[in-house]
Image 1: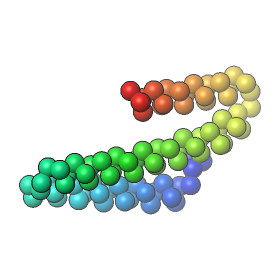
Image 2: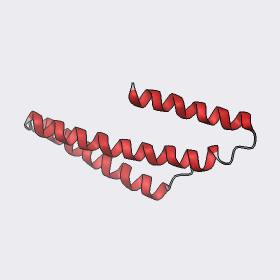
Image 3: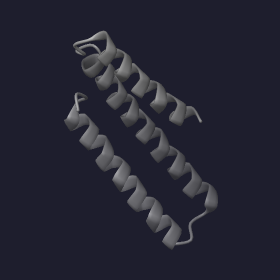
Length: 87
């Protein structure tokens, strides 16, 4: 992986903490909207992490591809990810 692994790890640890907190909220029968807000916050964080990973892929894997065919393959991989993100 070519993204900043320390930054990614830190953000994933935060997301893990958020999920642990959400699990406690569910166990404690917290207010539904409060749980939903925490879920949305965690989803947003994970989307940002994914964007950093994709950015690293673009800046390194795609740009450093040796052949045009390899570049095309790397771009197609990103297109699949984008469709999954939006669909």
